[in-house]
Length: 371
Image 1 (tube, helix red, strand yellow):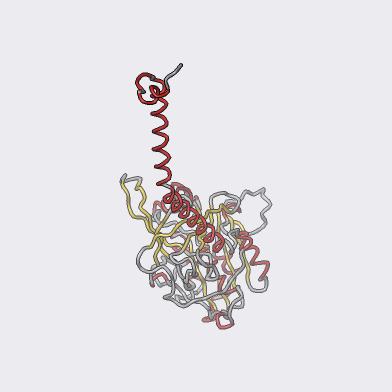
Image 2 (image 1 turned 60 degrees about the vertical axis):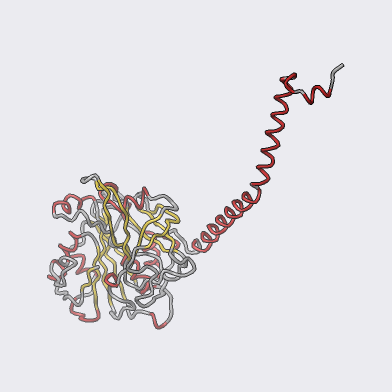
């Protein structure tokens, strides 16, 4: 017969029972420790739920405005200068979403948050913002500050976020590659806005507006590098989209432009390279009495189904589609694109004098605006 008192009071006599008691003691201590952590678990879970709810709420607030280009309406919602949420000091905001667009797979719509997610951006038309990031300089092998201007394609109807339309130039572009390929969703990048970046103000008083936009196509890369313009890659179309919102969009009567006719000559390499083409074609159809959109493709295959203008934006095409310089103050021409395009069409963008093709056609500095 087993002596129970001996079993309990003299554990060393029974090694297996000793180990069992040790396990029971450890379990008891773990239970007490777990109970002490219960309030912390409650706080952690609550914090996680609050963060998730906040993220879901932000997503709901910012997703009301469509990201797909063909679904975007033209909206006129102008604000005076000085109301932009971004000021002369760089502020970090998150990348909320990134959506590829077009057939080429190299262009993206990027949606960013705002410092105050309960308000619109408050950017005047026409104006741009500056983006900045520290990126690796491939030649120096060290981090350098890279800053580029970008013009949002969203309007002040969009609350809590804003959208950029960016072409990914791959290894030929520092910041565009970082934004389109490397910056993760939820990652941060800095933006600021300065008064200098407020261009021509809307609403516009000119009756007729001609727009020339060009994409920095591959055929210009070598030439631009030769002319030391490699650092400045510009798509050209985003300032035009911003202006078209003001000209075509519905809005308050005191914000309506006096423009009766606007014509866009849009130079691209091929039809897969037309940044924002779906939206522009839709607007041209919706506002056919006011807006004409003419693509000019330089390297579209001859056997394709494209039946529009080919080659480059030249003197003949400008004379064919644009209002003449003789209309005086009733006409203005907007130009935006890569540096080589300015050189050929109107002269460097930092020079007021109009030279090149537009100069030859008689347009003055008061009639040509270089973005």
